[in-house]
Length: 401
Ligand SMILES: Cc1cc2nc3c(=O)[nH]c(=O)nc-3n(C[C@H](O)[C@H](O)[C@H](O)COP(=O)(O)OP(=O)(O)OC[C@H]3O[C@@H](n4cnc5c(N)ncnc54)[C@H](O)[C@@H]3O)c2cc1C
Image (cartoon, rainbow, N blue to C red; front, side):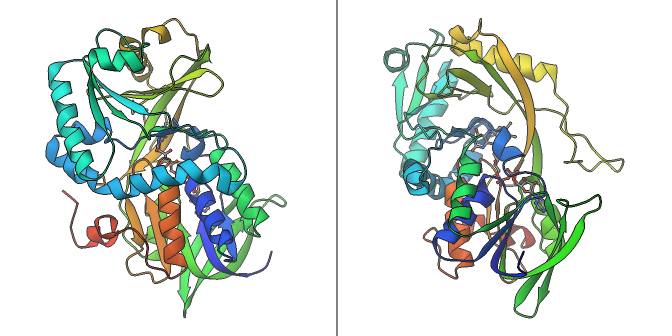
């Protein structure tokens, strides 16, 4: 492999693959480095929801927190637009379906919360309507009588987590990008006006082979490892890891066209293109820790039976037909949020030519995060105002309570 690139991207999840493709499309000479396999971590383990309404975790802490989380709406609106055209631009399907999303209420307090939520979202330009129970059952007859209202957003949907990242990695390679898997970035150093990136390659022989490459810019798309990579660069990038649970049922006839979420419970539910029902929505798993109490991301989190049962209860309460379906598989994965729930997107503080994006629903937001990162690496002004997501806000003490 050659030793000099325009951009080195660290991390081959959806985000790294998308930015590699976007940069290669612009003619940049790109190296994407992935320690394991492309799409092996959060990007291949998630629920595949494309949710543009505020999520349950954003509204459960009250209206002020919801208003703050809504500051990410420009990124969501751009992501919705990009997902809609992605398959055509990439040249391969990514399982994207945007047939609308429902957030359900089962009591009057939740219904009133949906009204307030919709007002906040509309003020940012999101198309969202609040329907009563009968109206919602007209478009979603699979919902139980316990649903008294729902907010409906027509651009929500789903994408196939198994194919989205790898498809974009392939598209990047077709455009000349280099993708190195089983290769870790172990050191990042500013060297004059460029970056010196040390790699540890596990592809040949028993022991890893070290190599150093140089690049004008470095992009961190490392998910839960972002804070660790920030430390390598000398930049403070605080993230909070969350271990989450997912369940998929056996295939059944197609009856759920929408993405379904809940205003008062952890729930996301959708049917895959093959007919399996995917059930998730934020039920916790237990992170495994090192002896000093810090999380060990190299070990799969522990499954909590109470989470599987709670998630199944929340699903069958609103979609009774899910109850009798056999569960095929339950799995866990780890993702990141930030201390103020807003994404971390922009230049890494104190590290010229280094850029980062992570935090929150970075599958949904992957394309808009990637677009912003590509613009920054190409020296262009991003089309979205990044001030609310600026990683340096934490150094200034903003957003940390
Ligand atoms: C169970 C679950 C359900 C979820 N559901 C949804 C959902 O429905 N919708 C949604 O929008 N989001 C969802 N998320 C969140 C979403 O999956 C993540 O936000 C998103 O996939 C992050 O993508 P990424 O590319 O930034 O990170 P990742 O996919 O984690 O990729 C980061 C990569 O960086 C690599 N890496 C790290 N350090 C190094 C290094 N030093 N050298 C080389 N490589 C390195 C890692 O090996 C990894 O492959 C969910 C997450 C989980 C766990």
